[in-house]
Amino acid sequence: MAQSFGQTEINWDKLDKTKFYVVGAGLFTGVSVALYPVSVVKTRLQVATKDAVERNVFSVVKGLLKTDGIPGLYRGFGTVITGAIPARIIFLSALETTKVAAFRMLEPFKLSETTQAAIANGVAGMTSSLLAQSVFVPIDVVSQKLMVQGYSGHAQYSGGLDVARKVLRSDGIRGLYRGFGLSVITYSPASAVWWASYGSSQRFVWRFLDHGAKHDEGTPSVPKIMFVQATGGIIAGATSSCITTPLDTIKTRLQVMGHENRSSIKQVVKDLINEDGWKGFYRGFGPRFFSMSAWGTSMILTYEYLKRVCSKDE
Image 1 (cartoon, rainbow, N blue to C red):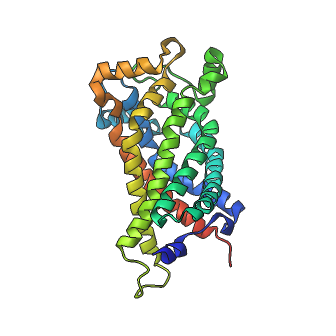
Image 2: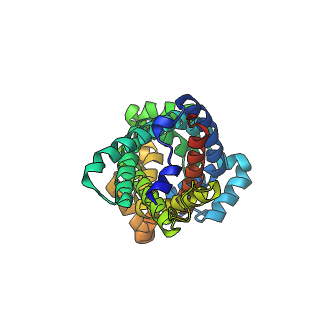
Image 3: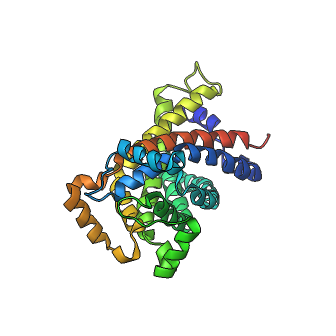
């Protein structure tokens, strides 16, 4: 199993970095276009007050299509893409380099391959997320305000620059980093759980398929590799969304609040419990579960395909 899995891995030192970044920007932009509407719906559900008319997935989608048509499902998309490209470059570079270093550090401990993969991938996922948040949080703040503008009493804006200007005027640079601590607490563990689950579940699936047995010692077929990677992505997305949705709900509410409605984490938690009980922390769970599972599967297949396309010729 270890040998066969190794035949499917393409490490950082085997990649053409320039091609990796250029082709990757195009591929991940395409994935973002396909899945972005789910983020818009999820965000609106998380910030809905108890008096909001649109409080389920179908009513939110219907309301957006009625008022803005298809463009309504892509509110804030331009801002996200502008910031996502540098953030993703930072993330992927840190992910691959940290993963290689973590595997080397774990070698003396003689852990099982599944355990070693879970730890190394988890450390790499958390580290890369921490670095990427410094770029992505301001983009997240702006894009989420655009996603919910006009909904449930939220302000209207003329675009991303208008949001940034008004946030800076009312709160200064700290306003663009509102929820940074919670973003780190949310996304870093989510990234750690996602990559740890992905790394370990791949090994588990390969073992389940009995790949690497004497009757099957060749390089696995591309469809089989894609099946294992997609299965790992689904498991990782489902695991991560279940664990981190409550923190994501609190973070989203903090980030979209206006200057005059600023609340503390404690107050946001209290409001959610008063409005919906403990299930309020899982507002938007359906879209987030779908988004993280679909995004995880699409992202990892795209990412692994990207590495195959950008691998250097031996």
